[in-house]
Length: 136
Image (cartoon, rainbow, N blue to C red; front, side, top):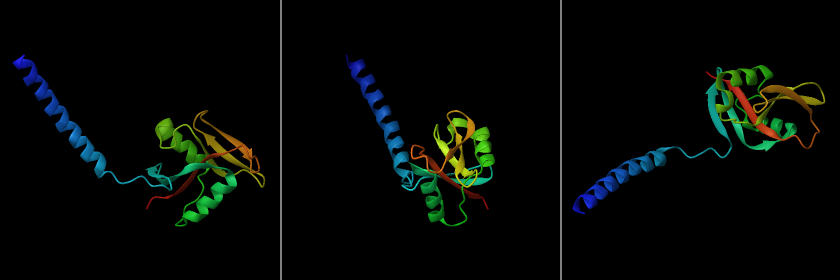
């Protein structure tokens, strides 16, 4: 019985030691950005919004960022998928791209892995807003 308690105490101390350092590492992480996730890929800095928006709302969000942010192009999104796949911070969402014409816009579906389009006034189309800018 004495060996059992010695073993139990040893395991408890080891687990406590490692979990304590894990908590300390978590505490050292910067807080999440409530305005979205920023990462670098394909020679661009990407900012992914925190919520789904329609195309017009996405354009307003991008304008509000300033500092040379723009909507990603179809090519930007295809390159991102080729480089990171569904492991990007975007996950399985679709991302709005540039305008297709005066009434519609392109978007890339990370779930279906292809480019599609939608009319601006399609109230049912809410995708993840994203903005890109050149990495300097």
